[in-house]
Image 1 (cartoon, rainbow, N blue to C red):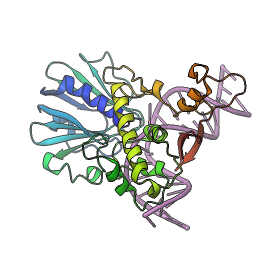
Image 2: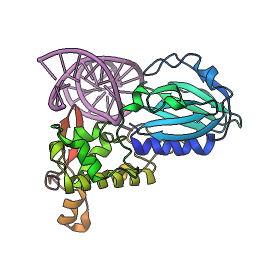
Image 3: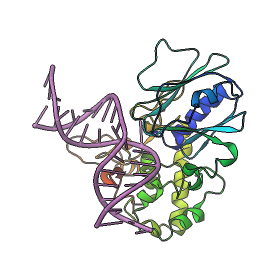
Image 4: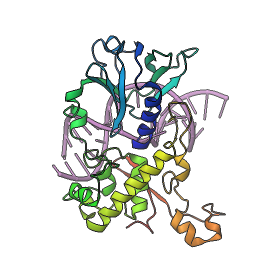
Length: 290
DNA sequence: CTACCATCCTGGTTGC
DNA sequence: TGCAACCAGGATGGTA
């Protein structure tokens, strides 16, 4: 579930409560998530101070004071939940629990266990198997139209699939892929190599804008995503096309008038279509996206 | 290279 | 109401 904006929101929540704090206790409640947890995982976390908490793509990067990094991915259903003290009881799928020196408790809860955690030497983070192949950060200074165009050149795959590819751009997932393509006016079916020049500029800008606005809204809550505080994000109310099959997209709604209401009466059908690409839902407006 | 499929796992929703 | 099928924000690995 969590894409870049959700992971960024989680990181900010974690940083607020854990940066600079020592981990007084660590508990591991099962041997593996997506992958086996490292040897002596809990013991190696205990007593460490959290130097900083940041993000690379959809990975949470927690730097520790002994030169190691706790690398985490939330997968589809992972949550990081903070509380002032120990919860009355653990919930199902609470897999890793860290207690800070001030009593703050962090629980990593992941029903589907597509998430992962690993300990990596700080100097080896960039060459880590899961990190090495990642494309540029879409909110970084270097990300722009020409860079995106270069990554898409020669790719004979639909643009939707291309921007889900973490080697092309890091952090875009299924929701923000549909949203970005809508705002760029590009059909998700268009072959990636045709997105060059002005089109690549529009797409790079759309990706950046959509992600930035989603972060400002605390991310999107679809089913189970919550911030570290337990609050929901609210960017789902700003989706233009995602999960809006049959409704009118904002541009078509504005053209239709009536105050731009997206609600349709009777049997009127909106413009937004749902298609399946690479086994995953894509939403788009065929009128506005070419 | 590319497209497509299955896979990891659980839980919520849908449809009969 | 009950139950089974289907679907889900990710990522990888195999096949053709």
